[in-house]
Each structure stands twice: as structure tokens, then as C-alpha cells.
Image (tube, rainbow, N blue to C red; front, side, top):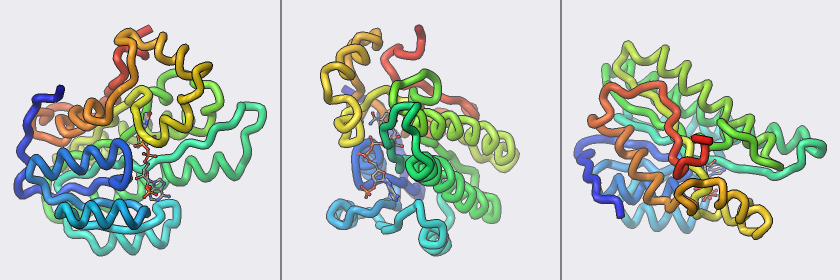
Length: 245
Ligand SMILES: NC(=O)c1ccc[n+]([C@@H]2O[C@H](COP(=O)([O-])OP(=O)(O)OC[C@H]3O[C@@H](n4cnc5c(N)ncnc54)[C@H](OP(=O)(O)O)[C@@H]3O)[C@@H](O)[C@H]2O)c1
């Protein structure tokens, strides 16, 4: 059980992908920690629940650049950002399609870059030091069958993290990525439920189990917090040791 406690009182934090899975859990933990949470997603029912809990909700398809820009333009300056929205489309490497590749890169990389740029620009303009966490994956570090476009997108996300760290560090903005293993969410159920895929993946994790969303949210909150004040530019595996061998 996670016993870390953080205090984000007085801080505005934007979470994309807040309507499900890891992003949902991050939004919950941030609310508990006193943050003013800006929750972005598409699912109206989930957004309604988040609003009832006290989040500011933003509804947009982040793959649609004009729609995303409109939503971002209405935001006040943030103190933190969690770029968590993401998709995977499974295809064998011989069958990779232009449409799926473009869709995955658009949502996982382009949109994350646009959101971070807008948030960082406002931070810099207002002289606010902040923290950005990009939710990448172990897929940036190791090969996963049928995940070509997804692995490429998460490799790009780690590269993007390093560039943002370099450019924005002098403004007091830290940028890190987290790289979780299979985490028990709707996305993972789609990719990893079949025993022929699940069992070898589990066997490759020294801790012998997949991650819970709370086990991914806690390191994200750590990276957002002042406890990580000298940490920037890292890609942090949250993988029970998967990428150690
Ligand atoms: N689960 C895993 O095993 C795992 C492992 C490593 C990394 N990750 C990464 O963690 C992040 C969250 O994954 P998850 O497992 O929590 O997935 P999930 O439960 O499927 O949630 C995905 C989230 O992304 C949002 N989203 C997707 N496309 C969007 C779009 N075009 N516009 C706006 N929002 C969009 C969804 O919003 P709506 O539902 O409202 O459309 C949802 O909130 C992803 O970046 C994923 O790559 C996941």
C-alpha cells in the first residue's frame, strides 16, 4: 500500500487522460493531496464524475489540433502537468498501417508536445516554476510484439522529455517521464488479457506481477512534488524490474 503523502495545496495541475485508468488515479490522488485539478478527457460520464469531485473538467479530442488549442487557450497558468492520455493500436510489424501509425503518434506524441508547450509557455510568461510528467512506457525501452507504433511513440516521448528538460530547466521547469510496465487499466486489458501474451510478460517481471494504477500514480506525484526538486530529464521505469534484464 502507498503510504507517501504530498501537499499540493494552492497548485493547479492539469491531467490529460484523467477520465480513465492511470490518469483517473492520478487525478484522485492529486485531489486528496489538495491540488486544484484540471481534468482533460472525452468521456462525458467520467468527466461528470470528476466535476462532481471538484475537478475543473475540459472536454477535447487531443488528436484534433484546433480543438486542443482552443481548450488550452482558456487555461490559467498551471504549476504542474501530467501528460497521461494515450492509445495503442496493435498490429504485427509486417501489417503496420499508415492510419494507425499516424493516429498513435498524433495522440501520444504530438498532442503531448502541444499541451506541454502551452503549459510551459504560460509558466515561463508568469515566472512560475513547475513540474511536467510525461507518461511514457516500458515500451520505449524494450521491444513488445505487435506494438510497433506504440513503442515508437513512447521512444519519441522520452526524447521529447529530454529536449523539454534542456530548454525549460533555466525557467525552473522540471520535465520527466515515467515508464510503467503493464498496469491494470482498460488499455492493458485489451493488450494483455490473453494467457499466451500475459504469462510470458508476467514471467519477465522480477516482482512477478503487473502494476496497480496506485503504484504508477505515487511516483508521478513524487515527480510533481518538491521532493523531486533536483530531478529532471529522467525516464523512470515503474516496472517491477522488467527492464533491468
Ligand atoms: N495500462 C498500461 O499497461 C500502461 C503501461 C505503460 C504506459 N501506459 C500509458 O499510460 C497512459 C494511460 O493509459 P491507461 O492504461 O490509463 O489507458 P486508458 O485507461 O485506456 O485511458 C486512456 C486515457 O487517454 C484518453 N485519451 C485517449 N485518446 C484521447 C484523445 N484523442 N483525446 C482525449 N483523450 C484521449 C482517454 O480519454 P477518454 O476515455 O475520455 O476518451 C483516457 O482518459 C497512456 O499514455 C499509456 O500509454 C499504460
